[in-house]
Image: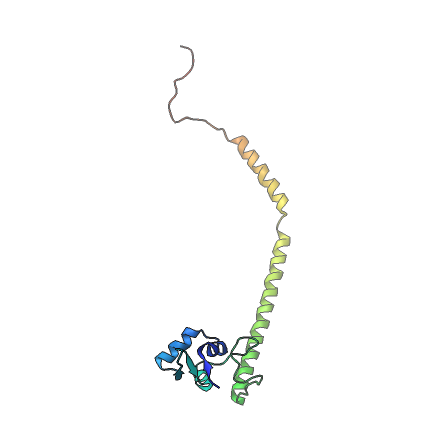
Length: 147
């Protein structure tokens, strides 16, 4: 049973123009119909474009649900990497906990923010009382006084 370009597009998830371009470029062989369409053998279309599943519109995996088996040398190398990464993670957690403890100790030594604000305000008031402001303008103004 041969497929039309429209049916081939549906089964591969491609567009009809993509299928016809592949036929015209020679990637796929097809028969020309009298109406101007194409009849494509399913094996020919799936040789170039993978079939998609009807449920999820994705190409099926080649292994299905199987887990590929690795040679023992690769497995042991990967297990070594996992152990190394777990050790690095443990070290990072320990260092994080040390930094957290240090931050807590420093926070207990600092005065409360309210005390700092009042102290700073009092210092500003004292400094303002000591400062004598002279207002000067940009333009010289005539002096007022007895004439």
